[in-house]
Image 1 (cartoon, rainbow, N blue to C red):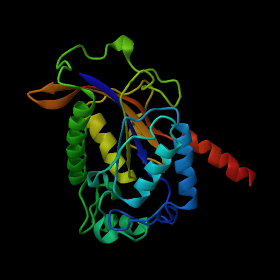
Image 2: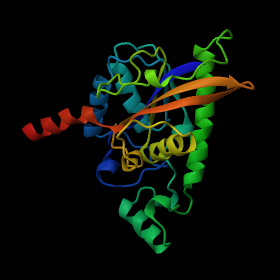
Image 3: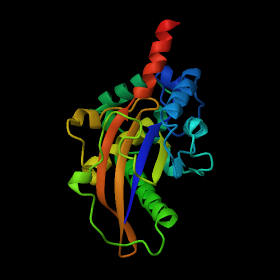
Image 4: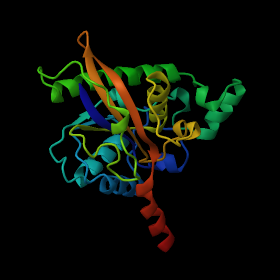
Length: 264
């Protein structure tokens, strides 16, 4: 059995984000000045946590964000940053580089909701979910290889109700007593699909008071989601036997940026 924390972070703002243009996979932009500040704020917020593993989309905006977070971190200077194309943003086909309003108009013309519409050449939501599921399997195997030696028990009790992660509004919520903690940096549309799969597909236990509208809401730039996962080997395959959500789309670290902008 192996229990670890998973902190999922969206990249910082780019100029395309600011201008409400779709980037997808084909447009590989860097962080804007605000995006750099957001990433730095995220890094400072997480600086006292130790990341044993880091998996990052291989698009520039995600790489920059992860580099800044790890640079700020007091305990993760030697953590390897694994670039994984499975974590790339949803592909939006012909809509990439165009205003988001164009995608809405294309969806309306097709008689579909914007979230469910796939532009020509783009990825369906099911294809994105398949990518995330493939990433999860790879990550689970890597976590057991790195942190669970051959003597690690393949059985044992799941996390008892009395030991459920506590949520106090702190940066270390849920991972305070965990030795293993994964940082994943990805993209808005991808994270939305990922969270939905963890909640609906893997039946993640949600914290009391969390509304489903929050679960399915869009993740802001450098917004954070956290889960605690327990794995067990079954027939030589790592499987999640316990999955708890700690928070969804947290953005506490961005408050200081708003305050500073008001004072300038």
